[in-house]
Length: 475
Image (cartoon, rainbow, N blue to C red; front, side, top):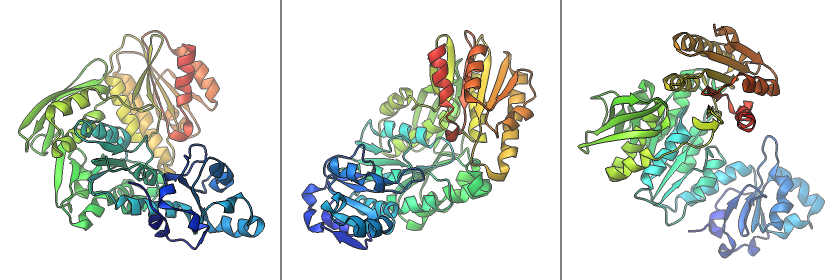
């Protein structure tokens, strides 16, 4: 199924030029990137914080763009200066805001498909949960899922434009760091089913406190409740805030590790020396029992596996297929990714960080057995606002407890202005702080020895994966 000319003209636009040169047969999709645009796609020129898509219009045209969507600011300047230029050799649609126009068109396109659309929100673990859910559902269905973590006001529309008539189900990640973003994404996506992984302290600079986080993330369930339809919310009973947010949903499927409180329950949890869990899954409604062994480390992945299993069972994926999907699932890069560098094990969890996700990573590190040392390399946790000092102190105190109960030597290395508070509040002998990443890399490489385990984590803006790259090249 393709976009057609009527779809384009149904967005709110102020001007349209050369539109007679645009036909439905020439529309092959949508792009916001002149480097990857394909012939016949419509180019939306997006103004970003660092890059202005309007600067790449000529490149998009040369690559075969069928039409351009530009904002009024660009149009008002270029029309009078260069009305005969390459810009106006193609159909041009002028809108007030190209990002909003992208969302409008994505919603128009989404309405063409009468399939289940599962939205995945939450503070931590969205991408892994989304990928695990898609992996389970793909055992029976043709599934569209978000690529990577394209979960914002641009990524969600681009995901929707990948829908075609062959897809049976869509699993779409939705993210936020400001109030109103989940609402906006729900209005574009129109999810029929929803999952909130958890509610933790995230983006406190904008949400203020965890109640603000809950209000924002919880809009997914609020949206579904307001629709008063037969759609389902998948609810994590191990998170009391998620349970509270779901109270107005007409239909709920509960999953968790607390017996007698969920439709899908994980019991008899055990963990091996690599920090990977095994457990028994009990389904009350399906009268099924399933023993699962995860191929990914961390107790938090038990929750992800239960969520994926609950959704799989709801959509009638055979239990044998669910078991296969869960047990063969591997995480994406930078999310509890196990990397070998010589005889050293690196836990690459560098995609992002807040206090709760750092504590979860520490719990996993605690469970992994080794004859060597355990080395913790942490960067700043960003976007915490006036709670930054408190949250970094919390992590430092947790590391103190971690080190005091460890049967091997623990080293702490911190990097960045805010992580100095982790360094200051962690009471252990082997610790150091760095403001220079190169110096940090060199000292980590000097410290590590055979059989050591290195946990590397920090917020996205800290690019802590640079340390992982350095170690894999040097060791």
